[in-house]
Each structure stands twice: as structure tokens, then as C-alpha cells.
Image (tube, rainbow, N blue to C red; front, top):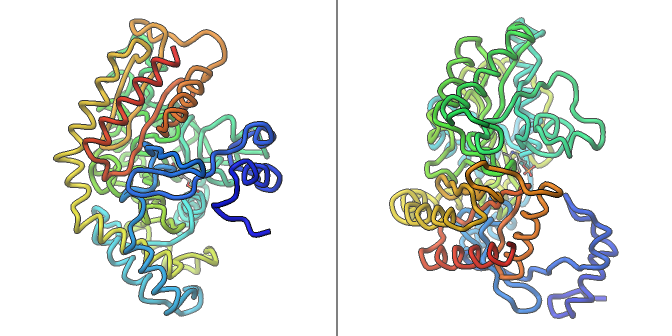
Length: 451
Ligand code: PLP
């Protein structure tokens, strides 16, 4: 059979349920309720097989920063596929797309983050980082510095290494994670965990857990600290202002490498090119993926400081992937960066649409179900609660209300995600003011229906 967009939706759904295993899903459920079949996309809008238009307030999975339907990227991909569809850079070879992309990333990345090792995803890049930081210390004559400290409810991917770095208990509980020598500390989620403390005191306290962990584990055992500048998959947790300066102080004091996982925050999401710039920190390594190509091609990487790179470059580092620096993905990423830069997408978000999005999104805090509406750049979160004053949780299973609101959003042709009882957004950075109005209108309606 030839399977096309023109087949009846029910038939496509039945085939999907029969043969496709969806990530992060209870797959048996698709036999009774088929997955929505997405057939196309343009700008901030998806189309489905029933002809519905859906506003994508998640930019896919936080990645389609320039929006859907940019022909330039398709053209670059086609041209590159004809010229050089594949070659690796393992054995004394290189190619122009990877040279050009690396030089561009060195220019865009702050400080002396000048050297890029590639992967096809954020998970792989964080696995790379684990090996890099341990190799770095071993090469510097300190092989006992192996432990990487990360945070509960952080997300760094779902491979064995990156899933271990992440602090999601639902991931740890399947398949034998975490691997050894990973240690987790608390997250700076004041809304859920701050109790009676002020956000500032709470942020400081959570940062100081890093110092306590270093002292408990022993300074000679700790290689690095990894964190997202703003936690994304954990529910868009924007840390109190006191948090990151204290983390930076502690990393400096104990010579702990700082890895900023910029897979979501990178490429404009927080209003600057990188989340570390928004948070005022100086990472030694940055993880990148997603917005690097706006999701048009799978590509990720680790950007290393001069110092880290100098140590790694002096040894044979036995690591890499068949598709590290894939020429088509690299060419598409470069074109994506050109568009972000030339069309001033990030500057426009900061000066024009961003303030409007903030004002409108924060107005959702007036809804009786919303305790807190917070947004930074174009990533935002609504904390749902039955009682704003006490920040109480809903009775019953945690996340059930969030799930229901998400279902209502989807029925109202709005993609929002829920993390527990938080509703989150991360729209394409090119979202217009009229689309922001539609987003807020549909979110409000869905919240009403979820009450
Ligand atoms: N790091 C962060 C901060 C992420 O949000 C994600 C994915 O959502 C990853 C890493 C993993 O990236 P990937 O899904 O491309 O493996």
C-alpha cells in the first residue's frame, strides 16, 4: 500500500498504532485513541489530516525557533545533498559546512567558547560532555574527579548518560539509571518547594546545596556541575535572581567545570543568543541542539572553552558519532543562524514581541486557577493551583489537572504542554502579536473548561 496524506485519518491512526512506538507515551493507548496526524506546518501553525489549523505554542519540542515553512532551509539541504550528502570528519578529513558552522558558533558563543564537537541530538551531546569532563580531569592528573553534579527535575536527555544526568525519577525508574558518579541536588523551584522562604533566600539556599555536595563528596572527586540556565522540561523553572551568581561563585571557588545545557535556552529562547548570557554566567562547556537548526535537521553539539579544548585536543579523544558534523545538518544549521541574525529575530523578540508576550502571558495569572504566570524571553509557565494564597496542590493525582487542561488546549487547536500541574509554552520566536492574542484567548478558554 502507498501510505499518503490522502488516506482517511482513521486508517493512518490504525497503522500508526500497529507499527510505530511513540517516545514518552503509553503506546497501548493509541489503539483506542489514535494520535493526531500532523500533515504540514507554516509559521507558528500546524495542519492536521482533518484540515484543522493548530497554533503551536511549543515550537515542536522547543526547537522551531524561526517557525515552520522556511524554504531557504529546504533549498540549502537539497543543494548540500547533491554536492556532498555525507562525509565524516573522523580521519583527517573535514568539509566546508562543518568548518563554516563551527566558525560561526565560535563567533556567536560568549567568551572563549570557541570549539565545537557535534552530535545529532542533545542527549548525545550530554553523553559527550560526561566523557569530556572526566577525560579533562584525568588528563590534568586528577582522575578521581569524576562525579558530575546535576539537579533533581533537570532534563538533559534520555540516553543512559544524559538520562542519568537528568533528575527525572520517572526516567531513573526504568532501565537501571542513574549510572555511577552522578549526584543530584535540589532545583530552584520556589513556587513548589520554597515554603515560607522568600524567593531570594530560597534561590541562595538551593545554590548552596552545590557547595554542600562538593564538601560532602570531596573537592577531589567532583568534575563538573551541569544545569539548564532555565529548566525547560521540568516545567520552565525560572530561578530566583540570587541563584546563578552563587552557583558561579561556587564553581569558581572549587574549580568545578560548569556545563550550561543550552539545548532549549540557546539560540534566542530566553531573549539573548544563549541562556548563560541572560543569567550572567560563564560556562566552560555549553550543550546545544534544537534551536541550532530550528529543528529542520537533527544536530547538536558541545561548545568547549579554549582551556577545556586545549586539554582534550592534546590527547586522542576516542569519541564521536557517525553523524557528528553531518554536512546537510551543518549547512541547514548555518542557514538557520543566518536567518536568526539577518532578520534580527532575537532582537525583535527582546524589543517588540517579547514585552507584549510577557504582558499578555502574565495576565493569565488573573485566571482563578493560575497561581503564578512567569515568562522569560519566549518560555513561560503557569502554575495551576486550587488556592493561590497557599500555593496548594490539587487533591488527587498530581498532574491530572494539567493533563486535562492540555487536552482542552489541544481540542481548542492550541499546543501547550503540561508538566505536572504546570502549563508551559515555548512558541516560535517569530510569533506575531495577533498570534499571541490567539494563544492567550485559547489558553484562557481551555483553563475555563478545565475548572
Ligand atoms: N537537554 C535539554 C535541556 C533538553 O531540553 C533536551 C530535550 O528536550 C535534551 C537535552 C535532549 O535533547 P534530545 O532530545 O535532542 O536528545
